[in-house]
Image (tube, rainbow, N blue to C red; front, side, top):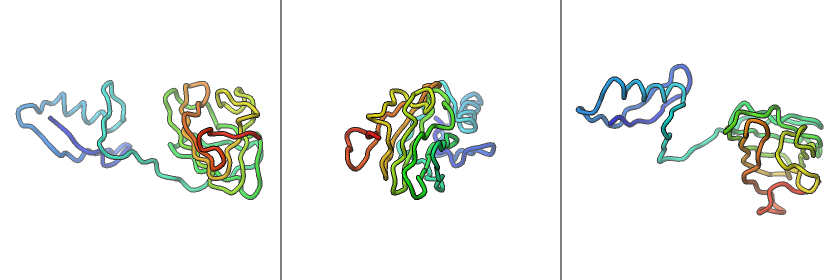
Length: 163
């Protein structure tokens, strides 16, 4: 059995091998393991016993009509000194893509309140605002972003608040 830890991702991805059973190692198993490591795609499950961590990037300051970046797993956004409106996602994402959104600033960020523009499924004026310190988990279905979980200080059980 081959088991290991992915040490880096990208063109030079490597696996640190933790265990090898001498009778079960075949070139097919090694090739399949390396394919998973270099592209992080597989027809089998990717299992980890550790934590999954998305590195928090430097902040992206948004103005009115600003776009939440979707090119990383974590979007660290800020209204940069004033409440902002008509926020949208920068694109629809890829079906199954996971995006953590954190409004790290002290002001609210309000989505454009139509799904076709904001790219948020079910968006409506009574729940379209990310308060200060909001953290939400969005998953793309390839057409729209779906809020799976989120929390705000005033309504930790509700996610987005009214604008």
